[in-house]
Length: 282
Image 1 (cartoon, rainbow, N blue to C red):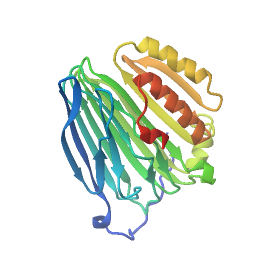
Image 2: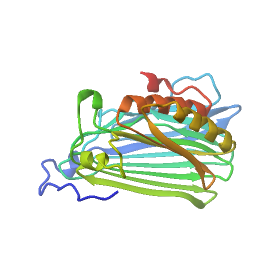
Image 3: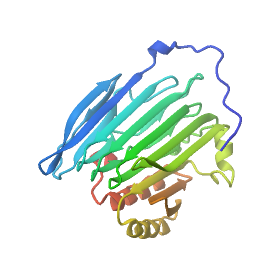
């Protein structure tokens, strides 16, 4: 999707050194029957916490102590799952992307899933405010027999508050490799008068919330049937699902955020085969 860019300010009011720049690095490994956190590094106000769980998987919750991101802020997340490990990575809350004076807000995520390992990457939505400029990238390296459920979603303003993203920018880049081979590549660019662009039938048909889900692993045909059954019952959400390059790809769009989130919660429960982290319901 292309449109004229949002004009950047000639001079930034805030210098670069006062912007947030940091992230989280994680490493998981199997100890006995359970997956444990083996390494953790935190910087720049970004943290990870590990709630007690009753299963064998390790659950990590990412936290932005700043309460949101603005133009010039940068966050990096790196996670490595060693062979046979099982982890769920979520976020404490939705990530708010505030108005920019010209600089982009950058979120970079790099995930590596080893042999026989399983990862659910399920952050809550990014909420764009009018004037936000978000550049987001997701890079995933999968072993040949690794399992993955990955989800990214974005809400254009808080519809319950009557907000509209009149202008802004969103750039979203996905790269997924399996056994060293590129199996999924996507770049999306939405820039300029966002509300007008989303109103076009060929772009969003009035959508103000969107999500993409990817699943890698066995049993994709069964999961595809379950996903399509779920989508057929969602009156307020338009979606589609299919298998591409041995990946299950699911797309969702909705004119309202709440219906899309409800469908997303149901789908993620089916796809992961487990209850979502508590942060998704608080």
